[in-house]
Image (cartoon, rainbow, N blue to C red; front, side):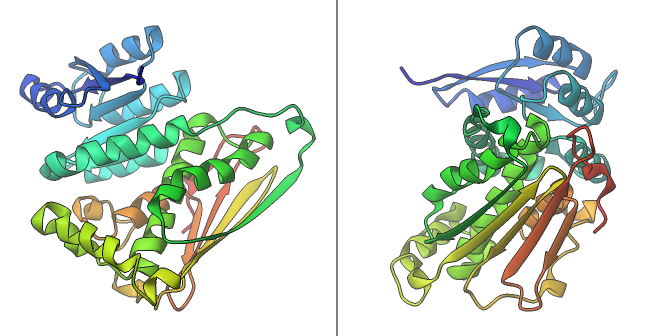
Length: 310
């Protein structure tokens, strides 16, 4: 019997609750509960943790930022997705840094809600437990060479996450954010780097042209022959990922500032915005085909993402 995922929708607008439920309840494996404020949501999370929380940002009593922080403390394994609108960019950026897994702009809810929700649920499912020798692991490294196959990404992330679990680096919420950053970085390297497919195509014909070009170029030379190289090095203090594609690169200066909350609503650069929100240090090489991401932890094993130095 297929698993059913419990989704908690939090919004002080009954109309918005109905709209969100209408989208989610079309999926047979999603069970939806809703409430009108953050305090009520926190009670539900404490009593019967859902698989995912989808919350508005601007609410009375307890807003989405406060709810995100409270869930990270009380139930760090429960991922939070934000719904963002014009005027909420700054608080949304804060919530991403405080523990939210992702966000969906309200203006693109119909097209982006389900893919984002599926992305987060899939990554949350991939985490495995610590092994018997975990207490003895002091450092770890992984090197991978990947073809341009999106279906490989969840397994790759699970493989990269396992050393973090064995090293007891970060809590579950922080590892979820690292998984999200890796997901965005790997897909960017495959699709935009090696296959040279523009994200602007996602806005045309309900994304059909985007998918068609991806499918075509995975079978065409030289695109199909390119590989994504991944290097991971971790110890008790930090983890470093280097992801390099074999494409032509891009002008990094031409991208919207990924640290500027005003760019939350942009389709282009969304992945880099999430990566910069979740990692402590993010940099590209001069060509633009290599991304280096670093995440640090304090002596208690928690992350330091609130102190991003890039």
